[in-house]
Length: 157
Image (cartoon, rainbow, N blue to C red; front, side):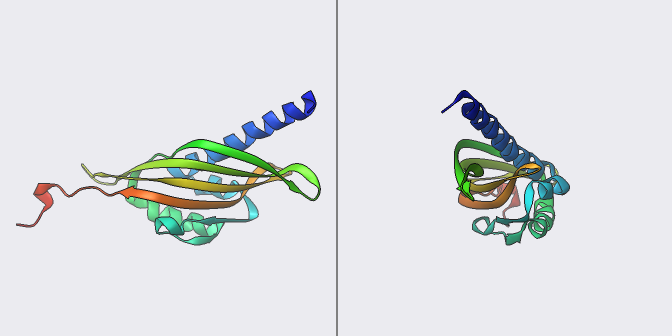
């Protein structure tokens, strides 16, 4: 590899990492305009393993906005990112795949509301566009979920 190719690869790695971080921030902040802007025009998301829907990113953003409104706080922690660049039309580096683990604590809205915590793995499919790297596909593989325990005060007598 030449230094120029190595530098380009490092720059692409940083840009892809930033895109994954922007995805987490958009979901956590409820910024659905930013969420939609992270995807290619034909981009799709699949949240079925977490009890959600699969479909075009704009439609999924609407579902997320409604579903996540139950939570006053959300915080994605996306770690162990494994990145592979792929080939599209006989060129290198036009596509990328990221597999990353996540932990996602969320606090229900309301005074003293308990937390829900879930974890699993993301599969991100990315495409280099004229605007930079964009998500073509996001698939959530939820592996576990811890629901809030009912407090003794909340139990019926």
